[in-house]
Length: 352
Image (cartoon, rainbow, N blue to C red; front, side):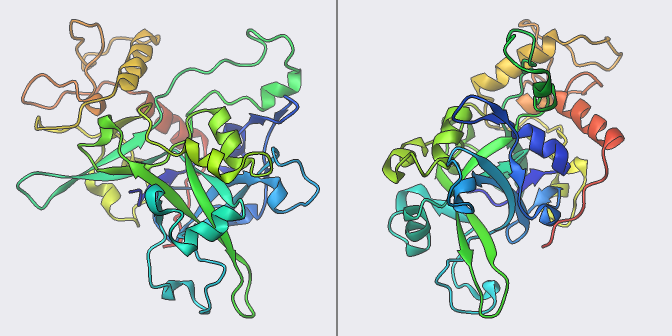
């Protein structure tokens, strides 16, 4: 399942992170709809507002279905046929939509049949692992492996100078497949809301939880899911399956309370050695990139093992019964959070 996410980037930065190429191959930035409703947060929970990508054709009949917009939507789909005046009176949970029953439940089947497919944007999502023999649960932050992206002009002479403003060379956003709907309460304002599609967990996450979001890995998958004008429903549903290109690390219990909205929510936490999920191969590739990054050796920098990779708590490379120390150069995520804190405004608290 997926019941908590982080999406803390400021609006203009989030826009650049969603740069894409349209059907003609031109580099584009999605335009916003209701931008003032976007509320960045390190700790988003159901019923709060989150940014989603969707085709412009949903709002403009003459638009190209490959063109994209970003719109903040309520997390927890409210069906268009809902008759009450208050969405909190909905008698069933629509935070997630199981892929195996998506065509059985009217709440999801109807909007899916109308092509109301969206991509939910996040830094990553949180999941809790039940600790054996106790009532405690250990939270994890789960996200795409981070690699250095190529900037325009490095190997592509055809890119124009304006493309430099559109390239994203930072954190790769997690792109999750979703379904949305539009509900019009009696005498009230239209409400757009969404549900995240879930699938069986991939092997690397199965020890944490048996379900995971349906993640769209790559620009082609995102484009096909959004382009309901050209890609039929049955063809789009072939994109809904578990993926292994994912990594994760343990975080502190600060994230347990959805009112906590600080970088500490997704910062790596050290754990005492116990039975823990194994990091995926993609996580190891991320570590290899980190190991090659220019850095100064600090007294408390993590020790390297025989493979030459630094021991990092978030990748479960501890080999002693004590938690490893993380130096200032041990985590790309730490450096990213530090830069965000220095350069950008503090995120606002989401509506609960």
